[in-house]
Length: 345
Ligand SMILES: [Zn+2]
Ligand SMILES: [Zn+2]
Image (tube, rainbow, N blue to C red; front, side):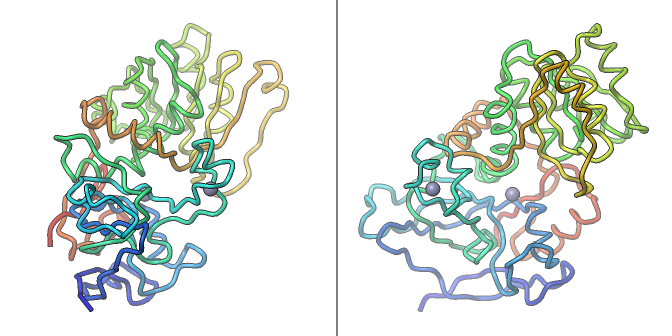
């Protein structure tokens, strides 16, 4: 048995539960590839898993699903030409055979699970995944940047371009715009020449929101921002809202819309129901849609946006893998703007 370094958590609890250990290196099955992990992003999902807030999680597993690396070995059904390929890992282990997968909507596959939920995650030297999950990255893209292609960028591409279908000249409102999703959604929307109005509740993150490319920033401590949106759009409203907050913002988001607008829901900050005015939906023909995850095609598009510099991910800190606990603590204390990425042992 070959061993590898990994970080696991010994029990549900605080960041101190994460510990460096050695575990058996996984062996690729016939249709798998073994990946030497170069960089792994820390997702808030991992923080919730470690704290015991995600059903079905078990202590001892290797968390992390935002992975970039290099194919080190392949199973017998996979071409050995792939050894050495630089890849990111599509985070859902999808079936590839259901109507959703066949239509390219791997994000809807019901026979899928997220990497890291049952082990095999990114806080390790190696992982094994089905070869179809290893997506080649463009030359010249660094591993630390590429690690974010799947989760924060891919999720933004799905919502902005896949669900909302934002195009040139569309007016787009982004709520929670200073957060990890918001900052990347602004860049994705700008990549297709949309006009972006960003909402934030304090002046703390205005600079970084402008850096992301927002055309206008509304600072709205009381979250009554629709009047200002109305003024900025000459009483036309916005064509798309990317709603990362929802709690205490949804009503104002609906009031900010143009005729036939799309309101895409990604956030669920307060995890409780919100009120909707059906009259407003009818009069303005507003379409409300949920969005989450990314398709395989979205990830390829994210890699392209990163490689061309159209999207520059906000990376607040790069830490060596054994310091993942410090990364979790920084995220829990909101002591870092942008993502924390692990690289090096
Ligand atoms: Zn993630
Ligand atoms: Zn499927």
